[in-house]
Amino acid sequence: MSTERPSMADLSTFALVAQHRGFRQAARASGQSASALSQALRRLETQLGIRLLERTTRSVAPTAAGALLLGRLQPALTQVASALDVLNELRDSPRGTLRLNVPVSAARHFLQPMLSRFMALYPDIMLDIVVDNNFVDLVASGCDAGIRYGERLEQDMIALPIGPRTERFALAAAPAYLARRGVPQHPRELLRHACLRGKFLSGLVYPWEFGRDGQTLTVDPGGPLIVTPTVADLAVHAAVAGHGLIYLFEDWLAPYLASGQLQPVLEEWWLRFPGPFLYYAGRRHLPAPLRAFIDFVQSPPPAAPPLLAAGSA
Image 1 (cartoon, one colour):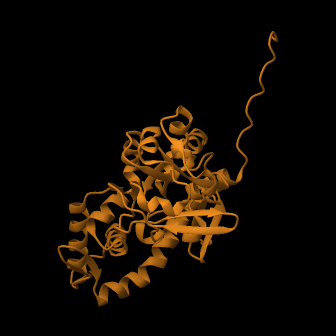
Image 2 (image 1 turned 180 degrees about the horizontal axis):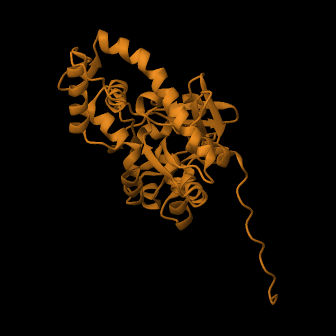
């Protein structure tokens, strides 16, 4: 065991790698290289004279000693981060990094103009956006907050409404497809149609849900294409080309419905559901960038400028 005391940077590196269960994941979260993190971990283990992490080709996990150190270390590192963040209160504008985990639908639609306004108000805050439809452990992922829908929120999280408060899924197909295969009159008829499906990164293909007059119905149709949400545009283009029906967020399909490239199908069955929430762990002290974003989300958007009457100066 070395007589040299471990540095705070190396201890923080160990905590980061242990939380993410891997050097690559920790490298993505920290913006450092995996090799730099590995060197810091080896240096720390040499100084302490004990192995802290068990490494395999696929995963990293704390040893008994590592788990003990991590349990004592995490509260201290949180306090240090909170103490440093207090300095943000002395600045005219907060600075730092805000890391958000958001689904594809949010990143594609309502979040873009919202983040543009936020960046204009807080130029010293760097936004780090992770697009991921899977529900993740915010602490383990290194994210400050996330956006998800109500049924996928943990009970111990604080949740604030963000974005549109109601949304719908829309079912549509190209006019050429409907002319060739016919227009379904009931969701069960989709079992006889070509449907362009989506799946989670875990591989689970999610069913299509419909609702009408208080009745809900789930169907699991087949089709020629399955994609993850990150490449849902592939399914949209396939639908426009006449390869089948697509069931996706209405906002996503709106331009194609408006242009006539896609035609609405079973609109009376389209499922309406509550909008998304910003969620974060309930902590006594929030980092200044996250606190600024929460205040921003809770403040009303700026009013549109009034239209000038014709002939006015």
